Figure 1 (cartoon, each protein chain N blue to C red):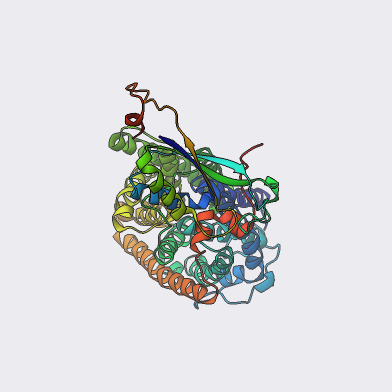
Figure 2 (figure 1 turned 60 degrees about the vertical axis):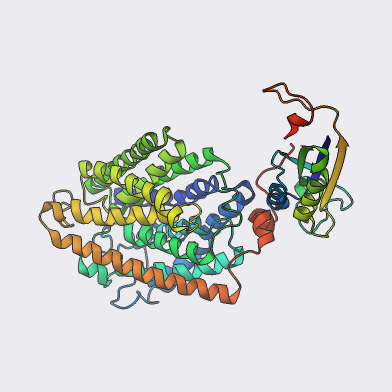
Length: 409
Length: 113
């Protein structure tokens, strides 16, 4: 039976999650130099176009068609059999297509997150091919393992409420791989690039925070108490993490920055994602405070020490924050919040922590290897990196023949 | 004392700066400007960038130097900015009448470096 309230909430949530991708575009776009602003917006925007089509043609089928194999197969390709009646194994009270389109928005934003790692130096053609292959051979199978009927991590009992593993750890580790293989940007040591528009970073963060209510509270797939819990802990964790990052900066560098506070809020949203439907508000505060400690360390200490150029910290925020969130779910999950979930380590069930660890490790290993293979393949076929002159002139002009800003007028 | 003004391709700025540092020319003012020379807006670099009309983006450097630094500075700019294609830019060398360091009110050669 289709429930009107549930359906309305899931459709609204789908629209909210879609808005996160342009939000991310401004979050990332503000961080790059002005000669690359449009390239980031374009990469995010074209993903909305390409993956929306991929998803209805075969992506949804590969991810969610029932099956115990590597992925779900092509049984639901072209949305065959995915109609307006509910499919009870996923969501009993909303049309199957409402579930499908909600999931489409996750499939769109995940590859967009990786952009942060290779920003300012990837060829647009290579980007398109890489993204399509990555969505098909990394996102879709992983999504099936964790959320699909018959997926092995789902059967194992791994908890991932709204995509900590599937979205954030997945995109975050892929980001590290691409940053490592594409190499550092030119002149990085003599001329550390400053973000060209911090107000855009803040605008993007605001849109992400707003959209994340759809991401997490929408993942209840119903307009119910669980959705409210997810909404409340999402807001709380984002707030705690933003505050925490500001305090860390204040103590370490003498001044709190808006860039840091915004980064912290995003890290908090990442970390609460897998936990949103399983934890209550005090653990949400702890998750939020600590995620900024971990991500701040990754971004300001570990990255410079190891020397990889994760331009906009896709790994440092999404993978590190996602890892903490997934493991924290294994610590703080409570059946008192969600009877359909499980208790975590702190509620007397250490086994859940091990299950979370298994899911995280499987994701890290599979995505690391598969992303590297896809990158090498694309590099072999068409070459991934722009040449030196194009990089110095900027991707806006050399990849799109457009500029974000004029000088006069 | 001379004032050296150079108009170069924006993407060559980093290389020019590097070459100048090698010659120990560290004091430099940089601005983003629009203009065109012989190529009238159709270098390979900017083709299709219709919104700027035939005015192209360039970077303008201003460097005040003492006589013994004039040639090294010119050579450094050429080394960093030259590609051999139209649009590489120009260097102007002007006599500089006076130079005053505001902080100390020193004047002349001593105020330049």
